[in-house]
Image (cartoon, rainbow over all chains, first blue to last red; front, side):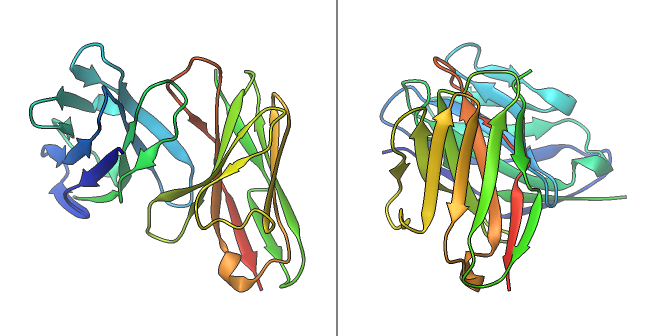
Length: 114
Length: 115
């Protein structure tokens, strides 16, 4: 069975500094991996997804993530944080075939200070 | 493209009443829809999966008689919370996918408060 672990429940950075949100996954297959962002009382927005193509995935708003099979990791990074990046971030795994239920990590709260 | 809407965005109901939440795919045919529940500052928990024209498949621990899900068309799924109690207060989020897609497209969520 698949699972996902977000290693930090809360990350605090200063505006303009790099962001690193860590995610490890467990899957018996070649999974699909996603990062979603949720702003307070809002729905989820897809930041990026990995579906067995390029291991370095670029997403929206300057975010990117690298799929490392040997480390079973899919960490999310951004070179320079912006105040508007403050939100809840979820790492999500899904086994094939397409349409299998998504398994969510517990989430990481990103705080950005000026 | 791939927009999912939910209605209402917020609802307050009295204990013992029922409330219906709609989830619509606006620009694609949703062969599968999912319903999630999110408690404050927690992750999303899958409640059930529904395929158009079929009965929903509920996750372990979710009462199917309390959370009635109907997926009668390729663009609409409804979640009815029957005999609501204060502990049913939560943020309910739906998502939808089209055939062959890895991705689920999420609605904006519905905040249910039971008084």
